[in-house]
Image 1 (cartoon, rainbow, N blue to C red):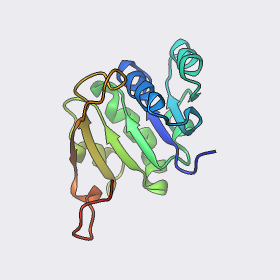
Image 2: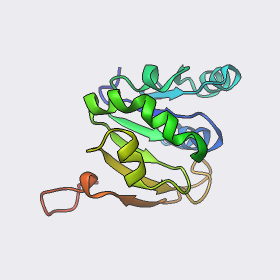
Image 3: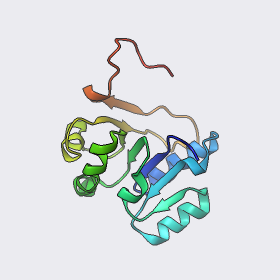
Image 4: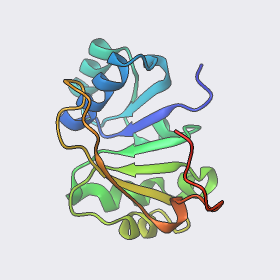
Length: 150
């Protein structure tokens, strides 16, 4: 079992694309988890990629060091608020791909003090390498004065 699993909160098209890209580049499917409320989508994700799937974000995120928030903007607040106690306890790295939702909003909805990065993938990541645009909030930036190692 991977010591630092990545959890996708939301298993829609962008999450599928990112999961496919990670696996195509050698990431172990066992190290990926997906929270998806729709049973048919959960089944398809497990069948297509071999990832672990759960119905709720709390079930999937427990113990994961990186949470990728891939839900529709209109449900982001409710999703974050349901994850807030776990986020406060675990302090994961949070990556959002939701359009129109700021890092400050996500941080607030998760109870504050979180490391949040907003990323906007610009092409289907499983088809070809395509660097996303990323914006970290101050809490997620390195404090040493040096850039993070790749």
